[in-house]
Length: 210
Image (cartoon, rainbow, N blue to C red; front, side, top):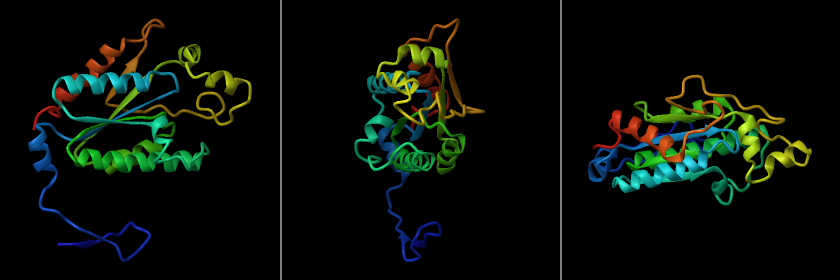
């Protein structure tokens, strides 16, 4: 039965249920839908992990899709800037899209700085049954800034970019992330090692089986 949605801007929008549900899609794909949310500073290795993880899952016959923060700003969120309210809306949109991918039975890999804890927690709240898996790239600012592949830290230090996370805008680290990727003695894990840690978690929690 259709039910009236209670949290939309309009009071005349109804939810339409379909006979093929998430469980049916998961059975077809032989996996369980979830969101792997990778968060951390610019240059911490989020995109590298996302791509390596996606390749590893593909090699195992598992269907995933990557939502990369920079890529999404070319389309889905191209109308947004980097003020706090724009960052919040950016994460809200990505969270809703990630939820759809998970509902479709895919392993959705979202790779975004997502600096504010409350915005990440709001995305977690969208997902049922603990299927939001937060991966914290706990890599020091010093290492991230030394990498600076895009030259953004240099511009931020010169005052040419305002509101840059880690320089003049805060990053709020997760309190209880499911997975934490850390450097050891200033050395970061290899992409394969990082992806392996996430795959092991997914395997252990049953996401790679229907």
